[in-house]
Length: 295
Image 1 (cartoon, one colour):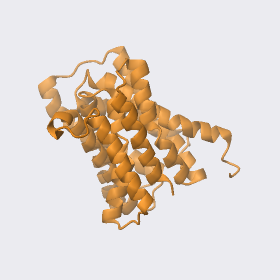
Image 2: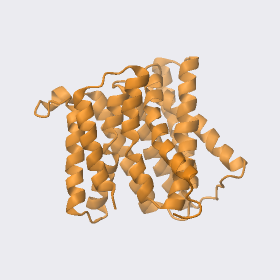
Image 3: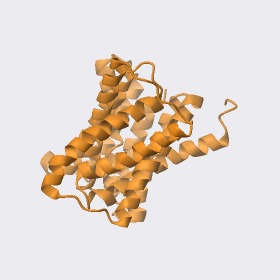
Image 4: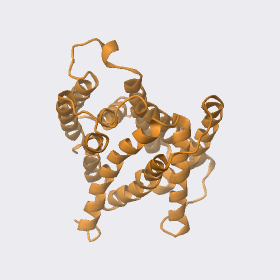
């Protein structure tokens, strides 16, 4: 362990999946009261403000972009901010927070699988087995335990939206790997957030013409502040602080706790039902993800 890898660093790293698990609770509170584009725009207006505060106080810096980096960060904003958050908020308007958070366990599975197919990343038999195990666990959750039931009866619009979010995040991750050079993780995410906020602002216009715009209630505003400040800015800074010190393998293992925290918070804070299928499927899915994530 390096000098910088203090107990405090590990505590912050443990707090990251707890914070991200909490975003499903805050997102659920927001999504049932606001349309997806409006909710996502407000989240990222707050997030961008918080990220830029880190720049103003000298914690981080933003370099000038060349044209290639500008295009790359635009693509990141279009996938990881714009598309992901529309899918995320849309799914939470249809599904419980606990159920949605367990579906998100597919994130590393889809990302690693696509990387193996597109970038020819080598996967060991154990990691392929982990992919199968994780997919089976998520299917138990999605099908509510009826693993042999009709797909049309198990998968609704909410599940499809969340799977769209998983695909958007996989695209965001792989685009960042393949097209970004010369940018820190903080700079890339801040520029992507700014681009994504611009795109979300454009999406709000037709949405507002249909639904109108209303002032958020205090509880909804607090949830938006949580999503923007803690769920985006603070968790991001803490996560990449850990990546810089520990490398990628250990932080990735910690992110496997996100669905655990999300499902637990949904049951405890929102009174959502904890189905046996969610419990069993969640354990199986997270076991599979751990098999895949271990280097």
